[in-house]
Length: 227
Image (cartoon, helix red, strand yellow):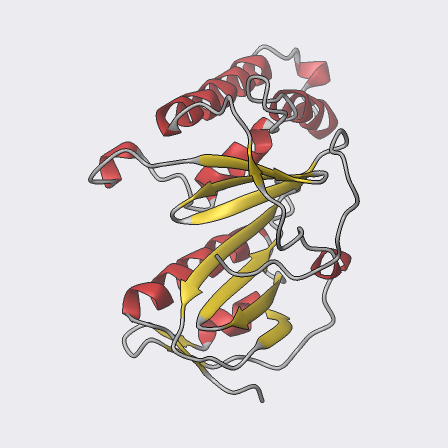
């Protein structure tokens, strides 16, 4: 059994628990990769509906390094929010994505990203378009395959000139990284970064990374330092 984790406070534990719960909603058998170093923890997950890599970080009191892939559900069960403590379950054989993470360094800003309100608006417009097109389908074409085709077309569109697919923004919103404006005391800062073939949408609540076909540079199969 791995040594327990001790979060800096109960809010950090609650944030990780909320992230795990959302991942499990999309995949009850989800696995997550944990990396900790120097008092920072990063939890990596891949919700299958969005084809992105999601990252939630937290401050912890432990200094010992940790790198392990575990069941998201078992980890969630082991989090005690009231005490800020987590029992880390035993390792599992992770899916292929757990062995290929974005590079730990070399990130630079990408211009042209709308603000948080603009990103929420883009997702809302896409959802409305999907519903309209779905409702307009004749009965003989109202199939899962046709709906999936429409969804792929809409969510593969990019945000402005950034190259960031709309599905990444949808994932950020669905995973709690892009909460509604009314739930925040002030507008949420959002940043888009790039490193090699990777794009990373970052907010104070977490990041969503996606590997683009047009990216330049070699993919480094190296740990992403929690940040």
